[in-house]
Length: 482
Ligand code: LMR
Image (cartoon, rainbow, N blue to C red):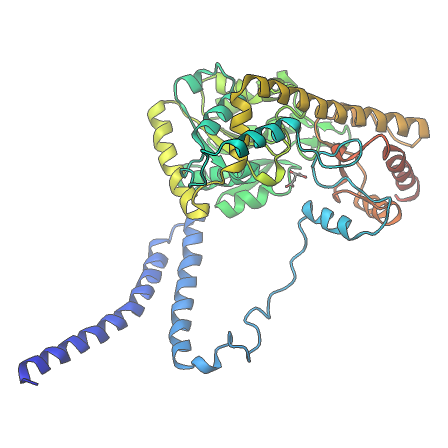
């Protein structure tokens, strides 16, 4: 080989070596940069620092493991790299179903998770949902292509109209951006991730008590979670004064989580007059409302009545976020269908907000699933199907209301100590019974009745047939367990 080309080859070899060395330091450099660039104390920065540390440790361990491949702990002979993992507790709500499923008792009753059951205790698929599915199946032009990042356009438009009202000026002025998300939880998470990245105040105030998943969703999204008083255990109603005081002393601009209706777990909602006071206070302090609307139509049986709180805040021209779920009101639990709407002051802001929501969604799950959203869109855009849905929804809401009355009457007839009128005063899927965790454990052990440890029962899981059993259990619990 001529000398010249030999030199060339040597140079090339050197270059490749340098290049591969650079590869390692490139990862480290990124980690260092991340660490150096994230010296401020915001939660997003905290997450960046954790990521940076993670990158450092994985890159150095990658170098080490290069030299000792045979002793790799992931080889069949080594002990598990996950050996240190401790058993996590079950979810406080979904774990109730896990325990219920393991119970062989024929009289067992699941009043834990908020999922509708028929009088026969069976899950319900709405007729109108079956019809919509049939239409979808029969339509051979339908394909299984990816949806856009923001989901099905029709679904988004119709969902915004459903919650804000068909004649909402915000919708008409294109000031609302709506993205299809994975039910209520996914909508809350996308909204929270967006706020953590782009909103100046990263604290969210949540009511006490609230749905157990709220603090986890918001914390993991990078928001700081604080609370405001909501429920008064002595009256088993709203602690309105406490709520106003706490929102009054929240920092200007803070985010406030509001349950649009049928507060979970208490079933206690503000009256329209109280909502108006909350609205005025929040607007005067520039607090940002983030509504969780998981029960539209389920509380009163009317889609419009259950959207009133949200519509009051939109009617004043101000901004807010709304997370919607179709799990309960269309019975689409496992289809994971929901929407996040962000109501903005102007159409151009809404459009820029949407562009950023896409950047939140794409690395999380890319784009949402097509089936459930297609069912919802089919129903919402067809006048007859929509009407049929409202009838079925009202029937579900009415059955729950009648369960409240039946349980209340049965406890009164039994002479169970205590004032049980909160059962008929509270609204929506749940009754916050006031039973303590010892009484809950007793009822599970002795009567095979399952509920969350805070004493919440899902009225939707009860039927005329099971009311006497529950009455016996509550009676025994309050008379035998302090
Ligand atoms: C509930 O509160 O039971 C429902 O919202 C279901 C869930 O995911 O927790």
